[in-house]
Image 1 (tube, helix red, strand yellow):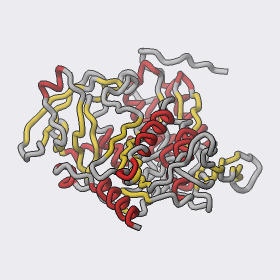
Image 2 (tube, one colour):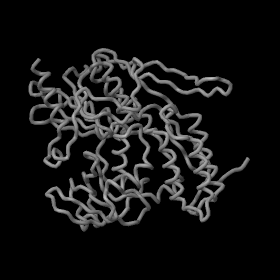
Image 3 (cartoon, helix red, strand yellow):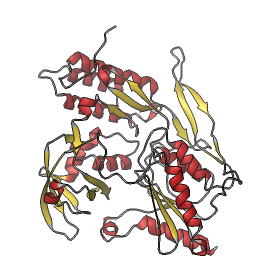
Image 4 (cartoon, rainbow, N blue to C red):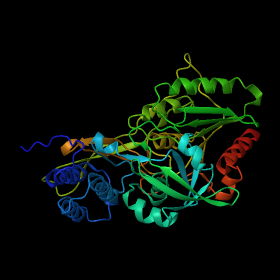
Length: 424
């Protein structure tokens, strides 16, 4: 058996790269749960990748990594990740800018204050018009989108904007910005934050505010924090003590960071909001049978989320609205399925990413790894949502003019819903 040592700083050999490509081909072929969503010729793309890996002059490790990502994106798996060895992963970085797509235009939502940013002054809500002299739309379409994996086009564009400035660590970018007031100017930034490092703009797992009309607005930014339930219970307790002034709960999942193995926390939060049992998603896993004429599946029925035991705590019975966006994925979508199946409240905003289900991290040659979705999740009645995402009951489009004016249209619609519910 040929054993390939983990790749260090030196460039991998063509054989090592071809073994990595072979592993991606095989593991995806036998484990990915959504082959009917693949429109490209997977085998042909494999042959092209193997050929690329052996070209002379040899591509750099970073070029090979991007080639693998471009190939993997053909699966349309919103949870797929090509995970390089740590030494290579540490060489990919981005500037400390938080970007968001608004009407398919890239805007700077926030930035980490450091010496470079004090010079660059990348004003919040500035629109990126060009990168390295290339119009932003062309830069995203040609240089970023092909490498981005997503289940649907709305989610793909959102992710492409978030990743549009990624590249080799330490390299500089020149941006042309349109400031909120309309003036245009340039800004130079450096790809200084490795993707393996802690993101300096990371929000707390849960943030809560009481709005002037009495609505409680909770932003769940991560279900992975071990204290998320304690934080939620504390915020919910504060809401209950608002008494007559309290109008309802707005649970904001628009920016929830996806994380593996955290749907248990999502379900635990939902259990605090229901007075009767609700069903979770049902699940199917492909089963490889070499002599079978057709695909076989191992099915798991929907589980049940139970309300809290009365002697421990009472369920929250006030009206609830949930905000979603194309960035809502993973455990947040698991939450959505159960929330909607139990008819607990209203879902407002834009369709979700359609990227949930159990994933497996599979080891490849040379220290590389592949994360791929290995189950198909659906509503308890069997409806799947991978291609379309989960649609809101009350659609609200995000408009640049609203954001620039400081208006949150989806949040406003949720507040109106709570007010309407309170009058019934």
